[in-house]
Each structure stands twice: as structure tokens, then as C-alpha cells.
Image (cartoon, rainbow, N blue to C red; front, side, top):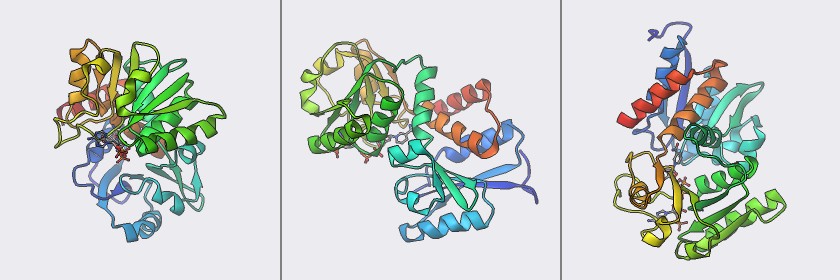
Amino acid sequence: MHAPDGHTRTCGLIGNPVAHTLSPLIQNHMAQATGQNLVYLPFPVARDDLGAAVRGALALGFLGLNVTVPYKSDVIAHLAEIDPLAERIGAVNTLVRCPGGFKGYNTDMPGLYRAMEQDGVEIAGRDVVILGAGGVARAVAVMLLYRGAAGVHILNRTEDKARAVAQEVNSMAGRTFARAYALADYGQIPGADWLVVQATSAGMHPRVEDAPIEAPEFYRHVEIGYDLIFNPGVTRFMKLTENSGGRAYNGAKMLVYQGIIAFELWTGTTISQSTADELCRMMAQA
Ligand code: NAP
């Protein structure tokens, strides 16, 4: 690794909390692998300081920033430009220097798309079941619309939130692309062999015994269960999927690819497949 010197470029992560983030591991590994003189550091930022943090990073010559919970939407007010996909999704996780400030991107969803491609999960023309209706579930629905899925079935504990997300995505689509259900109403989903994206926080460390749905009748239909949680590496949702004969994936590859896309935007370099594979192995052990 380059020892920091007068030419070192800085990138960072802002959010609150950031103490347990894996992004420095991912980003500094890529800097080393590509021979870039770059360091990446986490910065906890209080809500009232968000604008000052973005302006400060700009003034200090930062190459870019990642933005995490709870600021992915609030940071939009502090940008000079925004990428159209990020604008549609309504969440920005990557800031790249541009004339007059930072341009905001969403690399979470392109990251998920690349992860699914790598795992051989086809989206185009397919109906997809989404569990959850939070910020990430909404972003997944928008990504699936843009990537040519046939439609999405959004199931959420709070059904009203699923309805609101479906309505928003349908108005973007100009047709009925998304349908909303309560979690218990999975019996209304047509077809068999579902691709299910698990976008709730149920089962995330430390509540590892939780799953959004327990019913074996649900899991009997799941051909592919794609959990966006990466800690633990095997969630209860994944175990239930596999126990019923389905294939299950976790969110570690999504985390790696959102980081790769951000690094490529900042540095203009391309990360090789072998470095990407190495990062995925590192995340499996982190
Ligand atoms: P969020 O906005 O807080 O939404 C949480 C969602 O989970 C809501 O739909 C909520 O339902 C549901 N939920 C929470 N506890 C539940 C339970 N016990 N049973 C059923 N549903 C439950 O969160 P988010 O920002 O969308 O993030 C969702 C997940 O995405 C996170 O847990 C994280 O693991 C994952 N994620 C992964 C990556 C990655 O790189 N792999 C990146 C970002 C996020 P209600 O509406 O009823 O409350």
C-alpha cells in the first residue's frame, strides 16, 4: 500500500453510525490492487452537519464520498448534479466531483444488478417478488423496471407502505408494473418458481432468528431467494429457501459491486474480475 504523501487522494464514507462499515476494507483493497495512491476513511456525521460535511469534503479536495444510512435521501439537497437513475430511485450513495460541487449516483442498484448477473440470476421478462417496502425495496422495484422485469409483487408487513411504493413505481412505468400485498397474502401471487428479493431488515444481525415469512407454503414456491442482508452470511430466510429446495444468495456481492462501481467512477479505472472475486471471498470471511 502507498504510504500517504503529498499526492494522496482521499475518499470517504459519511453516515451515522459508520463504526461497523466494511467499505474501507473494500475500497482500500481496490486502491492497493490497482496501485492508486488513495485512502478511504469513514466519517460519522451528525444530521445538522451534513451540508457542512459535503462542502468540507469538496474544499479539502476529496475525490468522492460514499453516503450511507440515514443520509442517502437528505444528501440530494447538497448536490450540484444528480444522475437520472439516482433521481428516480430518490437515494444517492456515491458522490463524484463535478464542476461546482459533487454529482450524486446510486451504485447500490447497479451493484445489485451486477451481483445477480454474476450469480446467473436473470431478471428480464421475469415476475419478481420483493419482500419489504423500505428505501431499498423501493430502489429494487425501480431497478427491476429499468432492467426489463415483467412486473413486481411487493409484500410488506405494513401493507399501506407496499401500496405507496407500488403506486409510485406504476406512475413511473405508466402502467401496472407493481402490485402490493400484505406479507400474509403471498397466496395471491400468480405462477410458481418465484425469484424473491428479500429487502426487509428481518434477520439482520443481531436478530438472526427472524425471517419476514415463516410459512413453508411460501418457500415451496421460491426458486431463488436473494437476500440483501450480508450479516449474517446465511440468514434464516436463506435457510428456509434452501430447506425447500431453492437457491439462496446473500447481499455480500451487492455490497462489493456497489463499492466497485463507486471506485470506478472516482478513479476511471476498471476493477478486474479476479479482484472482484477476491473481494467477494474477503466479504465471506469478514
Ligand atoms: P428500511 O427503510 O428501514 O425498511 C425496512 C423494511 O423491513 C420495511 O419494509 C419493514 O417493514 C421491514 N421489516 C423490518 N422488520 C421486519 C420484520 N421483523 N418482519 C417483517 N418485515 C420487517 O430499510 P432499508 O434501508 O430499505 O434496508 C433494508 C435492508 O436492505 C437492510 O436490512 C440491509 O440489510 C439491506 N441492505 C443491503 C445492502 C447491500 O449492499 N447488500 C445495502 C443496503 C441495504 P414495515 O414497513 O412494516 O416496517
